[in-house]
Image (cartoon, rainbow, N blue to C red; front, top):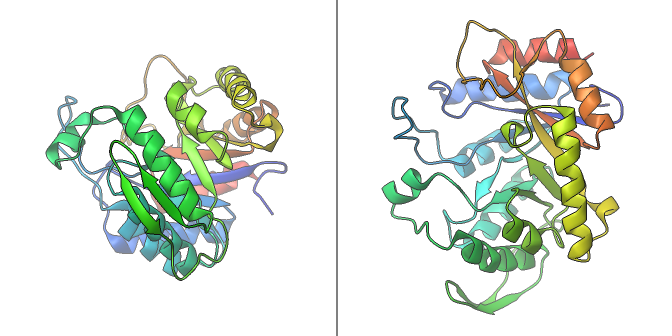
Length: 295
């Protein structure tokens, strides 16, 4: 049973808010599962620099997700969201199938085009023409994740009769994390989920509702029944104002422990099927206190 009736509630685990080692990740993941969160998520980035803050980097997301899948039993998990440009798309599909197997069918494949140019440059990954690159890569990825063979020739990719063997236990569910028109138009006909980050809609139910309506319009235009597309939204919540792990913009209001339940209900009423909590700070204590506040 979900923490709040009628909506799934997930939580994002740490990325670069502070340096976190494996034992703490395991503790947080198992705590999130034990208190009833429906899902947990890991960001997929390589390095942050040049933004006025100290240089910092996370652990490699897919390695971490595989380990988290092995030490949990029921909570769903996935990348929030995987950058489609960091790996060849057929290899990404193969990686997703492996984690879905380890997790026994709990993996949700969040995917996006990427945005942080310094990490592309640092690791030698092309940043240009991201829309066109995404369109090709997503076609390959969705075909393989559905269990089909794929042969494809494009500007950036050439695939010759690729297939995932062993076959995935199920078609792997895809979640598109984007507000970009080109990315959405290529992905919405096929994805099971759409996700939006909190500062893309002002961290408010009203902002989400407007964005959600726009997504429905695009879905209709590309031949997708909007009613069949599940909606996921991240919500920033400050559980300890003294922590300061994540900067809070003056342009929106973060949720707090005193109002997070109501804020999630408002998001549900605005059309969200899942809210993913982004906590400041994010540690075992905040996982536990958030679960208490939601009940």
